[in-house]
Length: 529
Image 1 (cartoon, rainbow, N blue to C red):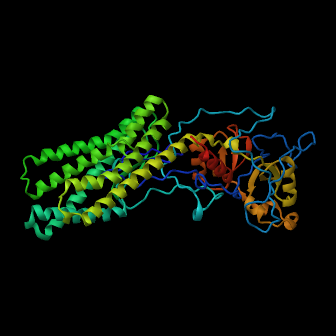
Image 2 (cartoon, helix red, strand yellow):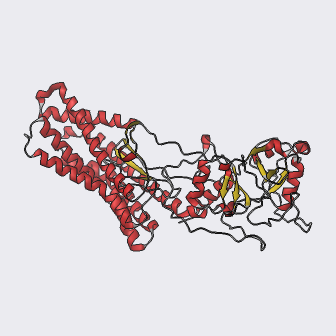
Image 3 (cartoon, one colour):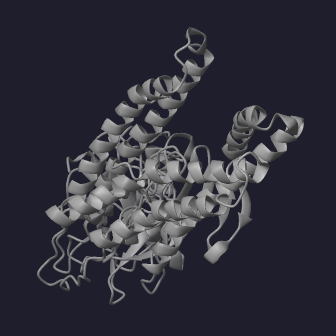
């Protein structure tokens, strides 16, 4: 199948699955996000990074620690929000006003520095299989987690520096191939006896070696285009190369997809040439013939014009070139892939039955197995096509995630300030974050929103904010210019629930909550493409 490129942040792309498509790829999600389409509950932010005089992107930066402007007046802010979604022994009210809408770019006061915008970074799609933290894995509002190192089975080596894994499902398929091919050998070379299963096992290993060559073709092409490859995995029904970005042009996309089937066709030709001087009714002859046919099937199958197969990627590149929109190519290739899945579900059993014997005795277990195989293949293709659509939508909407637009305004408070007083100052100035500062006004820690919610209102006058804060680390400082995958990568690399947002000049811009990033991500994914 074709490489599925994730884009910035993006999900990564999976290269073709060969022999048969591997199960569909999971669409990447923003760190700490809930599943797309779900309403993300407001979750308390934690571990925030303090800011000296930190303010939100859309408020005057000259506020004093008590929430007043230089002229002595307080800045108006939105009213406090309704009941919080967090637990805790509270009076049921949220101490913070509602956050700005994720898609609204905060405005800056006239006396504030002008925004510095770097050129938009190419969004090639979400990094492949970036996991969304949902359910038991953190749920909404939990800090983004560092992406785990590649794994997924038995490590076989690192050709070109890319780890190659054999998934546990491969052993099931190897056993199935050994059994089926062994039965065929018994009819052609009955004198082998039980040794036929050793020959069949060798065939299974050799077949997957040719699948690995197919995958390496995608990998080499990706590396040639400077696209990082996370891993290669041999699994049930073939293999997959996980490419972390997609090609930047339709021409490169076409080449990246085509090299896999091309190498399979070359291998089929090599095995055919090696078969010519060999006796057909010998073990080498049977093995070479089997490898020739299997590589030919791999090439033809992957050239079918529907995602997630290589042919689908090629079709996507062609439509992309014609329309100028990669999303149009993805939509066209994905729907062709779904039509292909239906054709496989219905047509494969009919084809195998028409090629077999007409005897009534043959209609039994073989027919059931053919139908089961067709159903599995159809499900894989259908799921892969759907995942490709979701990943494309993710890549399209990733640029909407902007640190500057999602940043909360913050007010600086001394460490010994009672929580009730700090909240009063924050609400008076319309801020939604508290930054603990030292005697010289330097930020030292951020007050965790989850900790605030857990303090009953009647105790807040006696609880200093320093007891609810987390120390600020360098990893909790993020640039206000970060967008899309760059923003998600920064949050994944330094798991926390709140981050200090700074300008390129080092000026404090405000505090970014992982919960706000999550809500913005869910809202963006819910929009039609």
